[in-house]
Image (tube, rainbow, N blue to C red):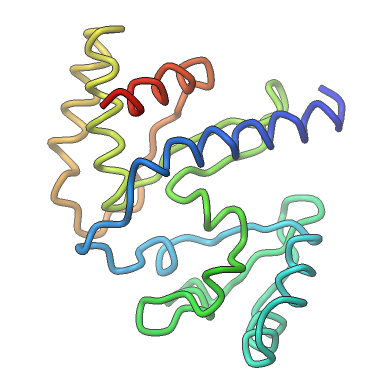
Amino acid sequence: MDRRQRFKKYDWLISKTQSILKHYSCPESCNASCCKNHIIDFHRKEYEKILKNVDKESVNILKSNAIKSELKGCYKAINAVEQCPLLINSKCRIYDNRPEACRSFPFVIFPDTEIGFGLTLLLCPMSVNIVQDYAQWYKAVNSIMYSQLTDLYEQYKNIDKNNDFCIEMKEHNLDSFIEFLEKK
């Protein structure tokens, strides 16, 4: 897959995750677990754009806490031992300018040498609701997957702090899952 195709696929996955996420919001039980338990990679151009659009204190925080990522052309905010350094009282201080990875959370788009990019769903209070709906969508498609996803939902619906959970979202399912959500 050439570079142009990879970017096209990445943009397509971002579009699909945003189409799914518009049907959900973080529940009250959420305490910004995405900002406290995950490291978010963001691209150099995005990093530079954020620096131009946020207040001086946020710029200083970001500059002093961003390091180069293992991913080519990316940075990542660290200090993730505790939480994102831009999180104050469980609120993002650059929310309107936050990185694409934050906008797409709990979905994570990861590089894959064969298919360009893959998509996983990480555990958080919102993703538990997505898993429940994904299971309902699967009910008509594949009874075995429906059963497995229903079991996952039951196991994680009362999550506390389990960051090892993730499920792969198959790209060929995304359009029909989005249609399911829009009819719901």
